[in-house]
Length: 77
Image (tube, rainbow, N blue to C red):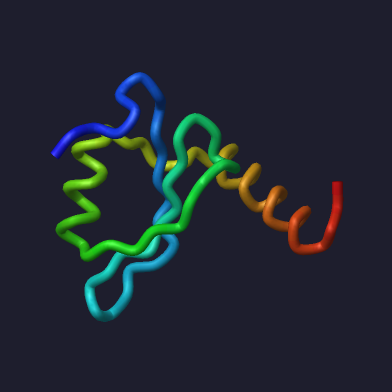
């Protein structure tokens, strides 16, 4: 497998590990607020993270994501 966008920082935030073994997570390239929600089997998630040399969201990034989500939900900004 190859690395997506090798010159960019990539981040993940685990949302949930489901009973059926799937991992629900946010994946971001560059900025935490620009992310997609993905779902992969556990083994595929580990391989995805290794292949893309991801870091976990920092506390600050998680806060940015929460604020951005609330802005979208409540029409703030």
